[in-house]
Length: 107
Image (cartoon, rainbow, N blue to C red):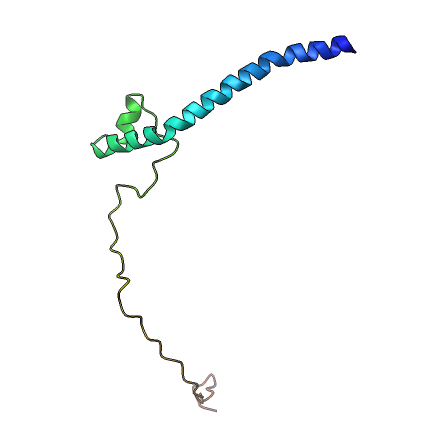
């Protein structure tokens, strides 16, 4: 039983080391996502199309930079100083509607 346990411990050591290295690389890659996205967006603003960037070997970023896309036109904001719109309460009124048969005669 001890030999089996020792063999299991021996087999897991390289896996644990590789897992640590892999986790470190993933953290480093994630730290580059935001600056890469900004640099990609700056290249687009400078006139590069996504197709041209792909053709020269530059991949589109996984995550775009935060904020509004630069290609959309800004929408005018409403003024917060504007007076509130008054609402008119609905009046309760009864309306008699005559019934009309298929021949157009009121009944």
